[in-house]
Image (tube, rainbow, N blue to C red; front, side, top):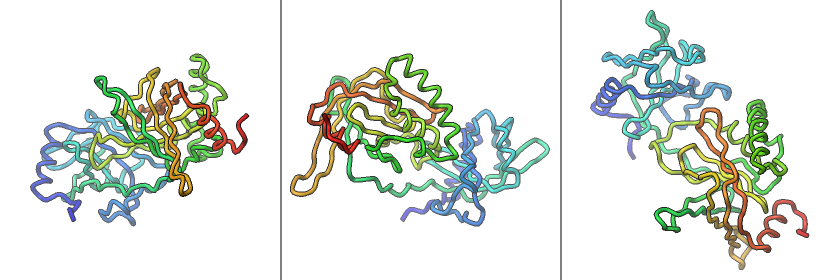
Length: 310
């Protein structure tokens, strides 16, 4: 099994890389009692403390292995004399180390320790098995290019979204997003009942950006909501470019009791609107079906409402 800790030579290469070309890092406070270098046990000190991004121009790495912070975000000062996890990418490889933020005459400083570790692969998330999908799009006139779509963790994608689904700590931010997005949707004439925007603002308000083991790897789209009219996707910004106004083919699969196997629904949908969080770290696409068989409209309606389609 590959160790997460870099060798001495690897650490020296990374240190020189940091010195030669400053790179952005994220800083997250950690619970010292749980921190032992094991990725599975490193957790934020409190749920209210999110990773703080520090831009390349806000730091300088000295030959002695000390990072000086210049005009960092103000909330970094809350972490003085506290243990933090510092994460960054080295040639697309996610790395981290643990240290303390210190106040010195020159400002705030971080000492790079002897131990630098690779960010480990996250354990696969258990997803509901009642639904899966593939979204198809054209690239150089090829239409067999597709990306997997999976149920977002914690979302009842066929139930009517309600405000109480949103974590209480995220509701203030979600409310601000909702007010902004409703105005946008009404101007475009795509607001409808507005219910499709609740999973959008929930996703954008609750999601927290984190470093991955490998930078830039494509991930499946999160499916946030499915009705007989629309489907809503969420993703990390830049993962897959779903263009507003563009039309895509969609294949949805629903496992059925034996011996029926599964039901497949084929549709096309157009992106009505894209929505982003205020840091442009996450994106949601609200898509409306442009073609869907009548029997499939009935199936989705009854699955979502529990009522007979008339």
